[in-house]
Length: 108
Image 1 (cartoon, helix red, strand yellow):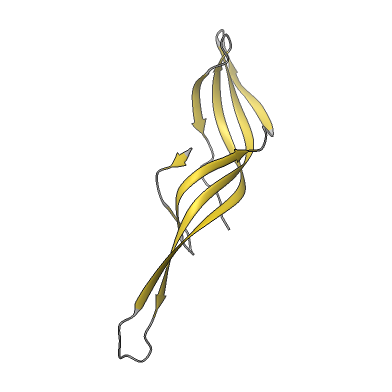
Image 2: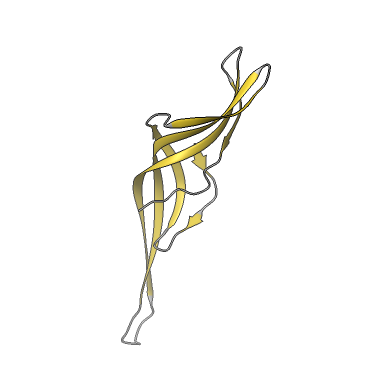
């Protein structure tokens, strides 16, 4: 799973968020049920990975040269809990619809 948009943080910019590991299904709520499907809201603890891009600005205090910008990238992983909406076809067990309800993931 990848997130295509970039999120700006105070210290860096996150890109390429990936789902590295699903730990378990921590809890669920029944959202709806009908003749052919069941809908659940599921809490899933997981390990997310991300690439964080940093840019540091260094000033030239001698006033003799230009200021410098240094870039760096770092791979980080973080435990997060995602909330998902799932609609499952009861006859086959196939997912008919999925939606990620969690809108924010925090990386330290």
